[in-house]
Image 1 (cartoon, rainbow, N blue to C red):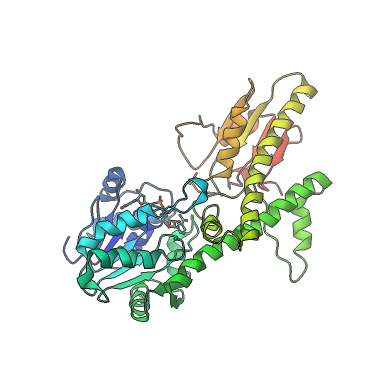
Image 2 (cartoon, rainbow, N blue to C red):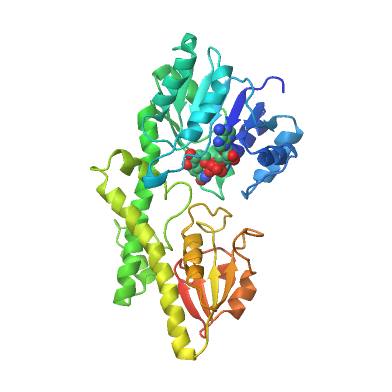
Length: 403
Ligand SMILES: NC(=O)c1ccc[n+]([C@@H]2O[C@H](COP(=O)([O-])OP(=O)(O)OC[C@H]3O[C@@H](n4cnc5c(N)ncnc54)[C@H](O)[C@@H]3O)[C@@H](O)[C@H]2O)c1
């Protein structure tokens, strides 16, 4: 592709929408992904993930020749690293994908190029990548622009938020920050806040840890209320009438690639200091375990009361409402745990956002609801909210579908 300017490394939930957005704005983008299937799908103008209006953007960008993909990088002017940063055993961050992606672009770098990490990363990662780059290309020292810019989008609303959210942009020096801000200002309408790379890295981790801690508070309340026989949804609504109280909603745990993962990056590097953050992770994980136990106890009680095995609908597998993403999903964890304890009950597993699953046999949400004696709402998908409450069913509404 001629005049390729932006090389996007990693074409997943964040990289692909970002690539499509930049390409639709008239910049030539070359997307890179190690997954051949992903590359082939995109080159056909199609997408491999569920995200509203992404399909049209990719189709347009590919049709107009502004977006192309391959499994290896080509030369450009700006390199964006948007690969996964999961955690390893013992909840330590794994930056090997960022390292691999960086190593792949090092031979292509030239004076004046801009290199930006968007992957959520432990503090100090941009500095580490700087050292890696200059070790292999010492002649480029101080001739590149290196920055970190975290992504804050909400899955399901990514195409809007990519444009309208504020962004925090931290370079390894001021000239890198300025260069990166200039780059993002071409397609971001939100404010661009300059800082240094370490603060930008920390900012992302703190944002998600803050959410995790607040959700843990709501989840803890749900456990207390269950014991106290108080409706937690009503309680929170009432408490939030206080002008300075804003409690979040409880759920079946916390999942996804971000909130359930990023706090560990802080806990791992600052174990003595991050006590609340660490406890919040434990509370949110415990909530999922508790939900699975609740299903187990409810089904045993049903058996005693009715003299027969229960039919159980497990509603939702995604990590949050109205998406197809099952990564670190508490709902999936609960479903797995419940099925491990299965003892001839009939189960209907429901996830309206995916067509099939390699482990779970999926059932349509309406027929599952109709047939089940016990309905377990693990995720508050919009489809479930159209169901009417039936008094003869036992409802375990962990996600507030009927709140
Ligand atoms: N998904 C979100 O909502 C979200 C929000 C904010 C930040 N983030 C962060 O953004 C980063 C990317 O997340 P995502 O959700 O897009 O992940 P993803 O798994 O959906 O996509 C990552 C892609 O990178 C590819 N990949 C892996 N190694 C590669 C390499 N060396 N070269 C080229 N491609 C490679 C994978 O095949 C995959 O398609 C992560 O650090 C994540 O924490 C994600």
